[in-house]
Each structure stands twice: as structure tokens, then as C-alpha cells.
Amino acid sequence: MLYNVCMVCDFFYPNMGGVESHLFLLAQRLIQSGHKVIIITHSYGNRKGVRYMTNGLKVYYVPTLVIYSEATLPTLYGCFPLFRNIFIRESIDIVHGHGAFSALCQEAILHGKTMGLKVCFTDHSLFGFADASSILTNKLLKFTLSDVDHVICVSHTSKENTVLRAALSPRNVSVIPNAVVASQFLPDPSAADPKWITIVVISRLVYRKGVDLLVAVIPRICAMHKNVRFIIGGDGPKRIDLEQMREKHLLQDRVELLGPVKHHQVRNILIQGNIFLNTSLTEAFCIAIVEAACAGLFVVSTKVGGVPEVLPNHMINYATPEEDDLIIAISKALHMTRFKKVDPSKFNDELKDMYSWSNVAERTEKIYDLICQTQVSPLIERFRRYYGCGLYAGKIFCMVMALDYLFWIFLEFMFPRDSIELATTFPYERYRQQMDQQRRSPSPRMSNGKQDFYGDGGGDGDGDIDKGVV
Image (cartoon, rainbow, N blue to C red):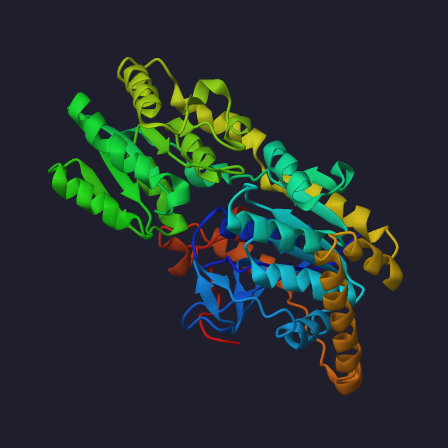
């Protein structure tokens, strides 16, 4: 069957990261399979309203308040009228939320369920159980997921974590890993500087990504190996620590800080290197190491979260998230690189079959088929599920859900469905024909060096067809 799917997340282009790429590329593949897909996210600067991206992907950039690291302020009921309008206008069948940190995602799942739509959730993160932030997030996630139709995790480690955090039945949780467009990360050995062994780091420069470890490791590696240099791409609050380290140890000629990197630039940076370094303290999957291996780099990574599930052992060296162990793992990788004990030229061929977005889309479609076969839960069953979330929290959750239901009845009375104009379906087939024609006869826009055709996810990371607000 074909479905009208609404994906909701705070994190999307032009912000860069694994979740953002996951939403975009999954949406592209689902559209190619014949489904209608739209995305709801918050506005980014001047990017507001409705935008059309590659292959007719429609994105609603809604005006909400961002409080921290692109996460929006939870409003509970504030966005319900807007969500309802979009769901009805686009004739949505399935609401697919992404990211436990996304307030828009949590609210869309609650409101979608109240409206009788099918809802599912994809978890991209790992959380602990002891600190205040994790306890609060886990309680809110338990509230949201207690009434969700199905949950998707990107690794088996992530599944175990989510099942424990949200007190879910493992039968209601599936594992569908991330993927990579291997053709966008073809190796090019001639791009690397033969005078140096280059270690590449591309990451958000935040605490969770282990930047403090990176700051400690770089001076020691540079002192031990005179022909090693670092290229670091990405931005974040920890960038100042890297700049101070570089100044303190006089490593300006051996540590290059590139700043923010768009997705279409990643491959050009990766092929300059020999080794990719990931120092994350927690990861549910880590798509960055897959992209690096596809580009022909040997990977050194901390052995955390779902990372051990991602790459075959001959492509990666593991280390515990400790300075000394990371130094040993990097030194072993440098030795292997010097004496050519690895053959990275074959990495791309191996990984393109292991991680395919077509496979991810097919498995996601099976989840959609599964949840659409289930019956809509009666109101009393929803109350029972929320009541079981805790002695005090359960009662609060029941009141929240009851108010949400009453608010929906009010909106249905004040703004009848008949008064909402249905959106015109994007002419996907005609667009594909035009893009096929442009590929056969490249226009100036298509020959700018960026892959911007529908078959490979396309775009420059911003991905707009029409840069204006529709």
C-alpha cells in the first residue's frame, strides 16, 4: 500500500548531522517508492514557511522557539492547531517522529494519536539512567511511547536502551540501521598528501562527541609521530578548546580547523585523509564512520554504544574512551597505514551492499504496513496505558491526554475539516521525468560539481529547489 507520511523532528537541514541526513534520505527513498512524504521541523533563521526540496519533498518550517542546540521549547498544546491543519491539509495517514530530544516530535505523536492517526517513532540516541536530564527525558519518553504503534531503533544496543528507558515490550520495537549513499563517497587515493599521514575528524564539537578526549590526544600523537597531521571539520561550543590547544602546542601547521561543513563537502574532506578518528562518548549508530570507510579511510573509534555493530573488524580499531587507550589504537592504525597492511580501496564495494537506503526504506514500509493493520485504540485503552506510567506521573499523563482530547473536539467544532483546503499533490512523476532529462542533458545548475539528482538523495545539504517561501 501507499501512504501519506509526515515525519516530524526538530533537527533537519540546514542543520547538519546524522538525524538530519537520515530524515532526508529516507524520505527520498519512500517518495521514489510512490509514497507521499512531508517533513515538519522548526524554522531556521530566514528559512520559514513551506519549502520544496529535491524530488518534491515538502518541508514545513514552523515558527517555534528554539531553546538549546536546535531543540524547541515544549508547548504541549501550542502547536496542536498547526499540526491538525497540516495533517488534514496533507491527508496524512502516518505520523513518524524522530529523536527523543525533539519536542515537536513528542507533541506530534501525542496529537496524531488523538486524531486517530497511526504513529511510530525512531530513536537515534542513547541515554543513561542516573543524571537529572536523562531521568526527565526518559519519563517524557515513557509517556510518549506508551501509546505509540511501533518503535524503530538504529542498532540493537539502542533497542535495549530504549526498551529499558521507556518500559516497552521488545516485540513492539524493531531495529533498522542507518545507511549511506556509497556512490557519494567514492575513494580517491590521489587526493591525499603523500608527505603526511592525515587523520580526519568530522563531528559536532560538543562534549558528547568526546572533544575533550580529542584535545588531549592530538598533542601526544603529534609529538610521537612527526609526519601526522589532523583535519577537523565541524562546529560547536568545544571549538574554542581545540583552538586553545593548537595555540598552546604550536600546532597551527599540523591541525587544520575547517569550521562548519555541509554534507556535500564531506567527501572532499574525507578523501584527503588516511585515518578517520571518532572519539564519541556515546553513539547509537554513528553514520560518520560508515561514510569515512566508504571513502577509503581506516577508522579508529571509541567502543561505545552501537559502534561495534557498524563496521567489520578489518575496517576499524576500537579503543575505550580513555586517553591512553586511544593513543595505542591510533598508533596501531598509523603503523598499519605506513606499511599498507590494509586495503581501503575495497571498503566502498563492501559497504554499499551492507548499508543501502533502499533496504532501509523497504523495512520501514513493512513497519508502516504492520501498524496500519492494527485497530485504533479506544479512548479507555489509551487512559489505561497512560495510567500505568507511574503512581503520580500516570495520573498527570491521563489529565494531559484528556485535555488534549477535549482540545481536539474544540478544534473540530471551531474549525471544521471542510473549511481546510486540501493541498495539491506534488507531480512526482513529471518531476522525475524532468530530472531524468536534465541528467541526460546537464544544465549549468546540474554541472556545478554537486550531486543534485533524485536517485542519490541529492542536494548540497540545504537541498531547496525553490529558495523562496512558497
